Amino acid sequence: MIKTTLIGHACLLIQSKETTILTDPVWFDYLWEEINVLCPSIVLEKDKIPPLDVLNISHRHQDHFDVRTLAYLMQNEKILTPDTIVLAPKDDLLLDILNELEFKNIKVVADFELIQVKDVTLSPTPSRNQVSTAEDSFPEHGLIVKDDEATVWNQVDSLVDPDIIQRIGELYGRIDFFHSRFVPLLEGNLSYNKPLTLPVDEYCTFLNVVKTLGPKMVVPGSAAFKYRDELSFMNRYSFPVTQDQFLRDLAAFCPEVPRSPFFPGDVAYISADEVRVEKQAADFVRVKEDDSHRITFKPHAYTPTIKTQTTDPAQHAREMQVVKHFIENDLLERISNSELLGGWRHWQIVYQLEVFGREGIQPQAWTIDFARGGALQLHKGDLGKINLYEGISSSELCALIEKTTSWDYVTLCGNYRTFHNIYRIANGKFELPPEDKSNYAMEPLMDLFPWDSNMDRRKFMKDVRRWKRKR
Image (cartoon, rainbow, N blue to C red; front, top):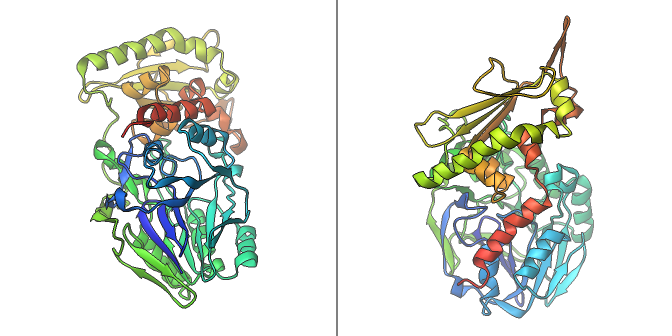
């Protein structure tokens, strides 16, 4: 028999008769650069968690790879023993962070590799995410756990296709228990002025995976968090599907597949004879408050204006000094040296950067008209036309300038928003950029402060310095 207990979000405790496996532990609020909290909230008695044979990390996203929780585990010899095996993807940055935290027994996994631990066979399953954008081009994996009675597959966030499903069937036959992806997250869509509607194509792939796989039972997996406190307005725009909606849709799409909700503290018992879920049966974790109604998708809801997150007046004055000095002394030179300058000029772009300070204070805007010949000029205020816009809080722009933040935080916190209407007018002609030339619409701030591996490294190392050896 295999027993799986949901602790929270993507963190599962998977137990066979002899083996204990912990996946993607995130045990503390706040998570992901302190943007999110677990939802529903939980009561977790950490001292009751048994010693681990395996710690599995699926990928580097911070709602799965939480430095604070990992640092806690390194200091807890009762849970993380000298014999605990750490499974990790072949991701140099992730492995560097594990080494900085002084983890031992790290095993880099390969797709469909068979890993024997006591009475279970583990097998990482592949993800097709590496064919997507450069920012998401890092390895990740799901995990199959099999003993002599049952087979469990935790898909986590992996993107799978029919070939992967077919291979799983060839290797393992029918899966007994499946933790399925169920919600396509719209995080960042508000910031980028992208559609705030259910991405139907992506959602249908989740339904199709369940129908094609045909497990003995499926539960929704790996999406149990919400935005915190003053960022809670983002909950209306980011989670277009709930567990209940997914289960209702599955009932219509593939009624032959048994299904169940699955919340922190619920325990699944999987054997050759039966698969059953017992609600709130765990003795170490339970739902504290079912506040999942707070992530009801209502994209028509009121959106507050951008504002600085700095509450101290003196600190706000300092950050505005940094911002104004950058805009009025460095911005034009940096933009003039950009590889995108030719594209901005070709498409006759009028660009506006608007900086928002404290609530109730008028934001300040600067505009650059790339259509004008000669040297670029910075104009304070409007020019009557905007084709490319970036609005950002003074706290976030100051942090980008000083390299103390990352685009993960800036684009997800709701205090950066952008849009573009790119076109070119000539004599009797109206021209739009080809779809494969989207780099012409790249926002100047994202060009001047590019996402790269160094930005990610700084982000993680900041957390390492904060939490390493801190109880």
